[in-house]
Image 1 (spheres, helix red, strand yellow):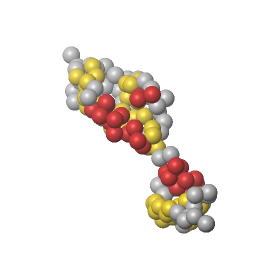
Image 2 (cartoon, helix red, strand yellow; image 1 turned 120 degrees about the vertical axis):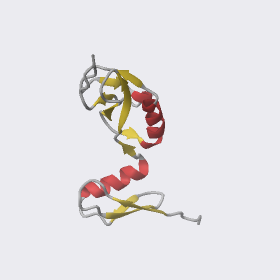
Image 3 (cartoon, one colour; image 1 turned 30 degrees about the vertical axis):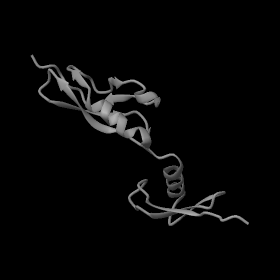
Image 4 (cartoon, one colour; image 1 turned 90 degrees about the vertical axis):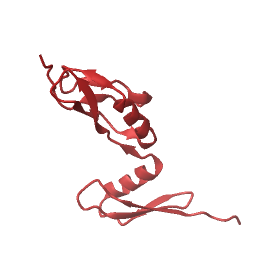
Length: 126
């Protein structure tokens, strides 16, 4: 018989304020989770192990406003492996006021199917 490799990963669940200490075990055939007090924790650990995703919340430079930056947010989760490049792209943008809350700043960022939208209305000065 061959050697069976078992992988264990530990996570702190961020789905609710309980913050369960989770242990995910991958025996090569099945994923099992322990430490969760609800099904959402099990789902969180499995997703974090197989396909981690994150929301983007950051700021983008804006000209023609009393504010130098405008807050932006993603309309859905972005694959974690694309997060750094998404942030780099956003940090290199420079918007022009006015911008309305909900305006699409970047459509389909890095072919993720997720838009980046303005989280605040910023009026033009002058």
